[in-house]
Amino acid sequence: MLEAQPIHTNLIKDSSDQQFMADVIDASKDVPVIVDFWAPWCGPCKQLGPILEKVVKGAGGKVKLVKIDIDQSPQVAQQLRIQSIPAVYAFKGGRPVDGFMGALPESQVKSFVEKLVGDSVDSPIEQAIAQAKELLEAGQLDDAGAIFSQVLQHEPENVIAKAGLVLVLVQKDEIATARELLDQIPVNERRDQFVAGAVSAVELAEQSSDVGDLSGLQAAVDADPNNHQARFDLAMALFGARQHQAAADALLEIVRRDRTWNDDGARQQLVKFFEAWGPTDKLTVQTRRRLSSLMFS
Image (tube, rainbow, N blue to C red; front, side):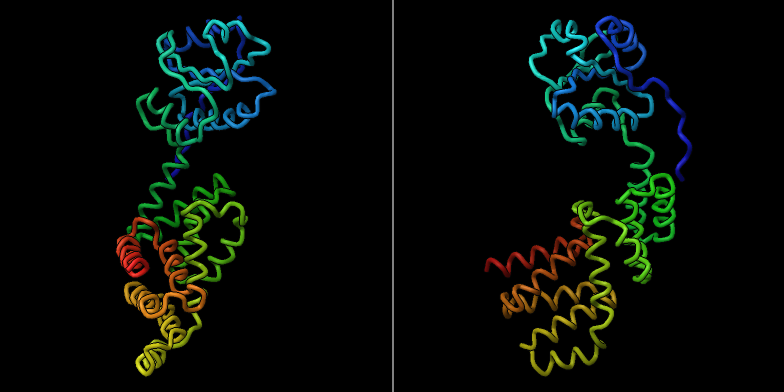
C-alpha cells in the first residue's frame, strides 16, 4: 500500500553568498546539504536541475538542496575554485565531502545521494512499482495489479505503472482492456524496456488469438515440415496457449531450416517473445543462447 508520506518543508531553496553560511554550513550539521552551482544561460544546468530536485524530493527529508546562481552570487563559487558549471558539492557536518561536475543521468545522481545519506532514496512510488514488478514476476496478478492501480491514482501518467497493469491484464486474458490502456502510452514514451515488453505482450496476444487450432496447424507441419508459415502460425497458437517453450522451439526450427524466411520473420518474432517475457526470464536467456548458436553456426 502507498502510505501518506510526511511533508518535509524547505528541502529545496535558492541561496546566495550572504546566506551560504546559514543555508549550507550550519544546516549541514543537521542533515546533508547538496549545493547546485548554476546559471540561467547554462544548458546542462537546466538538464541537471530538475533531476537533482526529483531525487532530493524522493529522499524524503534525508538531504536538502541549495541552489546558487553564480552570476548573482559569485563569491562562494570563486572560493571553491569552480571553473565550470553545473558544479555540485555535498556538505556534511559543516564541510564539503563530495561533489561532481557536469550533468549526470538520474541513476548516477541517485547513487551520489545514496552514498551521501547512506541509504536508499527511492521514492514511495518507485518502491511500490518495484514491489508490483516482483509480484507480477511471481504470478501474483491481483496483488500486482492493485499496486499498479494505486500508483496510477497518485500519478495518472506514470507509464511504468500503466505498462505493468497492461501486463497484468494480458496474463488475465483481458486483451481488449490491455490494448485500450496501452494506447494511452505515447509512442515516444515506449523506449523503456519494461514498457516495450508490455507492447510486445499485447501485440503477441492479439496475433495469437486468431491463427487457428493447434491440432490442425500441427497436422499441416507434420505433412510438410518445410511449411514455415504453418509452423509460424503453430508457434503463435502455442504462445497463445501459454506453451511458451514449445512456441520458442517452433520458431527456432524455422530459423534452423531457413533463417531468411519471411525477411527474418522467425527471429524477429523471437525477439518479441524475449521482450514480452523480460530479459532475465529463464526461457529468454535459454532461447537467446540457442538462437545465437543457430545464427553463428
